[in-house]
Length: 256
Image (cartoon, helix red, strand yellow):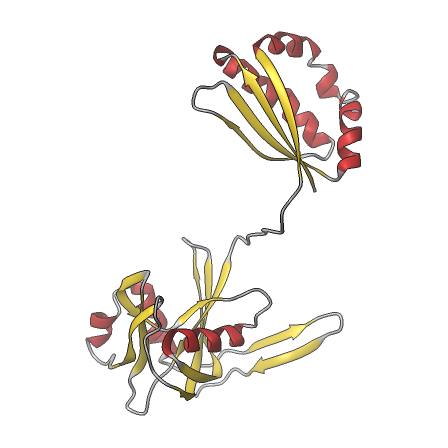
């Protein structure tokens, strides 16, 4: 995409007229010709309007305004444009180049791990940014990282323990935050239990029998997640690549 920022200085009393003209004519004609509005803003004094537009490339931008003059929206709005121009003091365009790819998905994916010791106690951590509850270790998946690798990494980073993933236990979606969580069953195979400086504290195995779950875990959705994981009902999960197809890992669904 090729982005252009337009800054329009206006007489404040004319904001409503300028704004109406934009929505009734300018916006429609731009969209007809394949431009995309990134955003449009006005300052607190209603003296400057800022628009950022996406064009397909520089050639698209260079051809755009001649093509726009041929649209019905442009031809039918020339008298309104003349009336609207009295409110405009100046226009300035800035052609902008991206400094990187900052795609942000609408949803994020995280992994957590249900781990118990020989006494039936459950591995929990207290996150420093969510210090009013204990929870299973876990966190957001990094780019190009598999769910299983994410689960193993998060347990190591938050508890110091190395785990082997045995199966997928639970999938939840937080409709408020857009986070989709995959909860796995893990078994400890090494490492040393420890708080993670700057990230977790109170790391340990906790008795969650009877009323203890409600004492240690205060968030309802974390309680529900732990209760579902404790059933140890495995769900199937395939992780693969395409072009060419390669099944990199399969977790079979089964009841432990």
